[in-house]
Length: 387
Image (cartoon, rainbow, N blue to C red; front, top):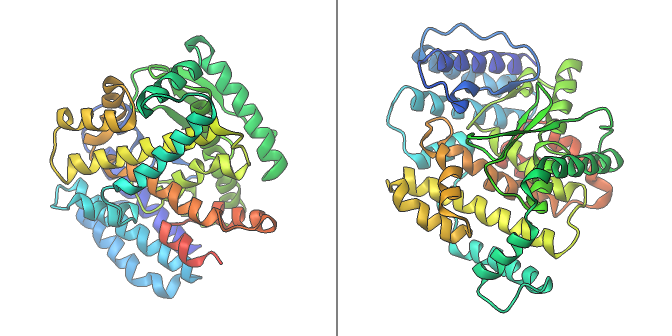
């Protein structure tokens, strides 16, 4: 517990340094390094980033002797290294995008290959054929399905609310009692996200500038609320308050070693509550994964290959089967220093969690969820320590 307290206070101190550096007043800058904390943490006073790095190095030396388990040791060491990489980024020191992915997000993934992307397209083709959208090129048939499946703009919030209610019922029946929890969908515009879990106010902010199918709203209901971010944060808040989870579990830290599992848990919500109902949902999952993978590739093209957004957008739009204007809007965060590697947390985290989930026997689901939600993880600790 002492190790968690020190890590949390140091992280909060780095967040304070980051927030005290003049930036724009945009949404992402206002979030800071820690967008959500579900328990009070006293920031460690830090004069500058050099002092922060020295404090992290000191803590790193003490971790092997202080950690109560191998899982905890490896997670805290990975978290410290991710914070050191963030400090180098904030201080303007040379650090490649590949190194940021490896140290901050905890993944070796670079470009996601053609074979993986083709598997998604094959799944999409099969599902479209099952639903009668066949006879043309994949892009054309997918476009016809999306046009037919699109939820009218004036029904989007009500549809999201109804799907969130069904997701809550499923979570309460299968996972955790959540009947007293709720997040109200609220429409917003001109923001750099599709949806956002505003945990403190218990609201889901939905970007009404984008079109949505029923599946995409179903995915957002499970990702942002039940059994995704709301459930995850509520469980962590309770565990920290009860003293069964270290204090660093109270913090959501952007582009850090914790990010991939935070997003990966949310992106597997549909599977946890057994809510893949037919070919439309299989299509939706494959399309979601394809677009998530292509956003990773866009980040790699931008930051490792040095391409401009004008060069990137047409390529990603065509490969993702999306409108170029929507694509540019969805990639707007790529030039944000803190957020640039974060997009890999979605695809890599979804894969990391799903690879384990597919091995879980039905009688071990509850045990797995406890292990997953109530321990802080990286993709590697999840793989190494779940048995």
